[in-house]
Image 1 (cartoon, rainbow, N blue to C red):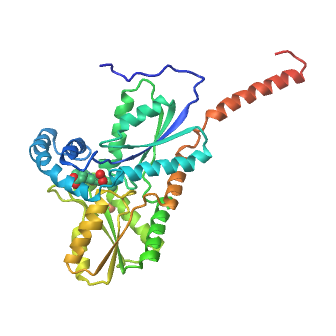
Image 2: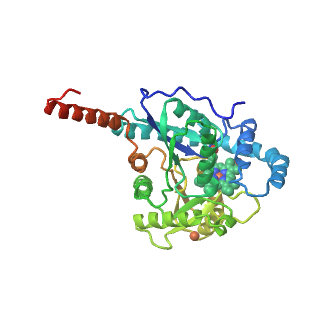
Image 3: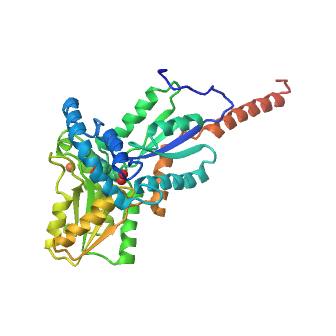
Length: 368
Ligand SMILES: C=CC1=C(C)c2cc3[nH]c(cc4nc(cc5[nH]c(cc1n2)c(C)c5CCC(=O)O)C(CCC(=O)O)=C4C)c(C)c3C=C
Ligand SMILES: [Fe+2]
Ligand SMILES: [Fe+2]
């Protein structure tokens, strides 16, 4: 097995391109236990996701989790699966196409925009190799996580780095920063909430449910908790909500350790007891609807809330293909391209330098 990937022959004549790779978490290939098992194995073997010492975790994962969870998770995936596949993959693919449409207008021919999944398909490796084959000598990686967490954002970087370590010709690399407090993102979220209120009426309380992470990661310096709370505050301010009209909570707890609190499930029970006429729920940490939003929040969360005595429950969809979001995301990405759009410009500059030199020679009556 060669140490490095095979490279195409280098040619000056081949115009260099910039690759923009949107990366989200990933889903199994099908909503079946057979497909969920290898997906969960890849996901939960990532040391960024589970930090328990390797030999101990290997036993727990292979002996218990991978024998029990695939069947349960597959049933959940089946409840949200679409004709085109997993909602997360379908939305991410659509987002890449729309961003390509928006940025392609501005940066004709120079950009290749695509998407990858950290776990499952299409893989980061496959998509970077595809971009290299198209002569992308510059690469912008866009982790589709507004709030930084080592378990998500850093894991994307680790995988990109692993792929580049196997490359002889490495593209120049930029990784987009987390965008938890960017106006482009907050305004798109607020626009989505306002639209939802306009069409469906407005609830008395807004629950903002973020994916959780283990509490020890906060204690060890992971900024996820602070990013989530800042997003929550900025969204509330944009919507004119004051304390008491909204709650930030954390969902999707996995395993026995303590995770960030308050847990969404506890908040739902508490709010149900308060007998407010209607609760709105949004998941601002997910830019695309997926298992965690559609099954856990829109379905299970609703059932739990109503069973605990709540009256009305209204789920607000993720940003998905919302126009304002696509335009905001394109703006954030175009900022990362600053100084990189060299292709046409470089050759044009070179030509104009030569033309200037020829003109100088001519004006002096000299031959080149
Ligand atoms: C939005 C950010 C996410 C963080 C932070 C995150 C941390 C995290 N997740 C797990 C365990 C699981 N997550 C699962 C699904 C899942 N997680 C995210 C996002 C974040 N996870 C998304 C978008 C999804 C949905 C994927 C889809 O296909 O729709 C799952 C798999 C499903 C299941 O079996 O329940 C697990 C497991 C941990 C342990 C963790 C932080 C340490
Ligand atoms: Fe997760
Ligand atoms: Fe904090």
